[in-house]
Length: 240
Length: 290
Image (cartoon, rainbow over all chains, first blue to last red; front, side):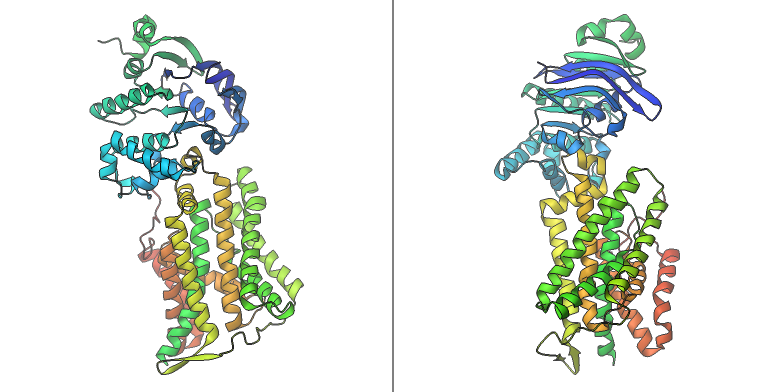
C-alpha cells in the first residue's frame, strides 16, 4: 500500500472546477513531483491534501498511511505526520527564526528530542543559526525557504509536501534548496513537490506527474518524462 | 493636586489599557473590531459585585470567578456568533455590526438582571487608604493599578514565552501557515476572544469598587479605550497598554486643571489627531492599506 493515495480527486471553488478527477500515489521513501503550467491545479491539489483549503470543495478520496484524510482539518493532518512546506513568504514574519522553527514542533511533546532536531536543522542550514534571533520577515527569500523547510523537518514528519520551492529564488539558491530536498529524501522522508521549473523538478524526483487544466495527462519516471517529446516542447522549453 | 490627579489618571488609564488590550488581541486574531468589550466590563463588574456582596465570597474569589465567567462568555461569542458569521462569508462590516447588537444586548441584559440602581462594593480592604509621599491614596485605586499592571505583565510573559502564546501569535500572523504547523487556529482564535473578555471583566472588577457599578459603566470606558488602542498603535499589545495609561492621565489632568467639561471629549480629539497625524500610533503598527 502506498503512503499517499488520491482516488478520483476533484476540487472546486464554488462553480469553478479546478481539479477534475486525478489519481496519484506516492510510495514510502519516494520523491515525486507534480509539474504543469501556472493554473493547472497543482497548488490546489497540494493544499487540499494538507487540509488547508475549504473542505466543501473536495470530492474523491485522499488516503495517507492507510487512513482516509479527506476533509480533515489541516492541524489534524499535520499531527498525523503529513506536513506541508508552504511558500517561503508564509514564515511567521514577526516571530524570530528560532520561534518559527520551534512552532514547527508544535504537535510534539518530547522537548529534549526537539532540541536535538533543532540542532540538526541548524546543521543543515547554518545560515538559520546565524540569524536565529532575527525575525522571520527580515530574511532573504532563500533563507525564508530554508526556514520553511526547517519548520517542516522539526515536526519529524513521515512525508513532506512542498509547494513551488524554487519560486522567486535566484538559480544558485534554487540549486542549494533542491540539494537539501534530495538529502532529506535520502535520509528517509517521503516527498511530493509541486514545481513550475520542470527541469529541476525532473532532475530531482524519481517519478513525475504532468498536470494540465486540472487533469493528469502523463505520469512516468522522470527519465522518461524528460525524454518525452511533448513534455520537452511544453515544459522544458525545447532547449538543451 | 497633581499627584492625586496622576493616581486617578493611572487608575482609569490602567482599565483603558486592559480593554484596549482586548481590542488589539481581537484585531490581530480575527481582523475585527468589537463593540462589546466595554459591556463585558459591565458584566464582569456586576457579576463581581454579586459574588462579593450577595454570595459573600472573598474579593479574590469573586474576581477570579468574574474573570473566568468573562473568559467563557468571550469564547462562546467567538464560537457561536463571530465564527458562524465568518463561515457564512458575510462581509466583515456585518460581523462588526453584530458586535454592536451584542453590546446592547449585554447592556440591557445586565439592566434586567441586576436592576438600574448603581451598586457599590462595600469596603473591601481592612486598610481603606495608604499614604504615598504627601498624599493619601484609596486602597482600591492602588489595587486597580497594581493588579492591572501585573496581569499585563503575565499576558506579556504568556504570549512571548509559552508554546501556546507563541502559537496564538503565529495564528494571528498567518492562519493558513499556523494550521499547516498543526496549530488548531479555531481554538487559538477562541482563546484570544476569551482572553479579551476576561481582561474586560477584570477591568470591571477593578474599577467597580472605585466608580460603582451601573449598566453604562463599560460603554463609556469601552469607547475611550478604543481611542487608546489607536493612539498606541491598533493591534499592538504594548501600544494598547501605553496608550491606555497615557489617555487616562491626560484626560484626568485636563479635567483637573482645565475643566471637567472637556474630559469626555479629549480622548476623541486625541483619537482624531492620531488618525490624521500618526495613524500607526506610538508603537508604529501597520495602519495604511498596501
